Length: 211
Image 1 (cartoon, rainbow, N blue to C red):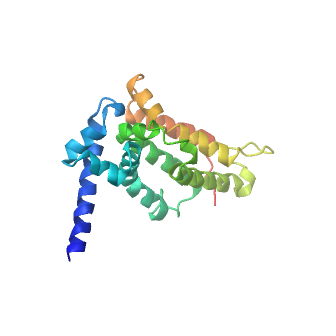
Image 2 (cartoon, rainbow, N blue to C red):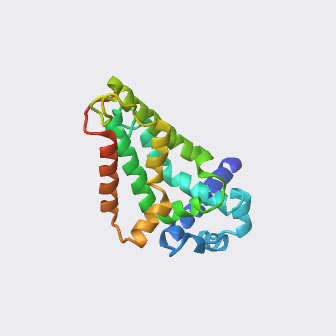
Image 3 (cartoon, rainbow, N blue to C red):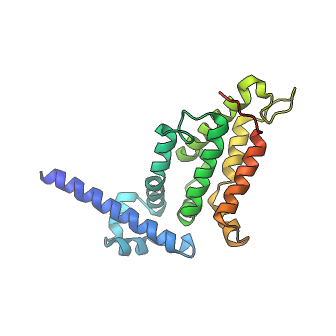
């Protein structure tokens, strides 16, 4: 019983820390302004507790990010169309990118903090590889159906590479780009979504096929 209570307390404390960090990043003028001291104070724990549980600031940021994006990842892995695996590529690709863009917009200082954390190349991270793999597979399925004819690929020409194109599309949802457009250019969330959807639509073409 005591061990079960200790585990429950540890889980509750972890959620308290994650929630405190999430709120601080959401309210901050810059993600660089959120320190481990700030998070510890907001969560009501000692800074040493944070380092023991999360290793360092990057580990804590990654834990917050993963906790917040998990519902979206679950919807993509197991949910219904248009995000889930039952959706056709022509429907799923723009839905996936729109969902990622919305997440980055709604959590852009948290996402930006992770991008700026200096935790190695983002392209080698498991999180990035997961999204890239899904997009690459969907693009290759779309362009592979009927040889790509009538699906945004000119007759007789080779379809774009799915691996490269998936990288390009994910680059359009980077938090630093979202922050730049929202801050310096004053672009709204809905305008950004519309422009990304228009770009993806042109890339994929207007066909309704796709396996």
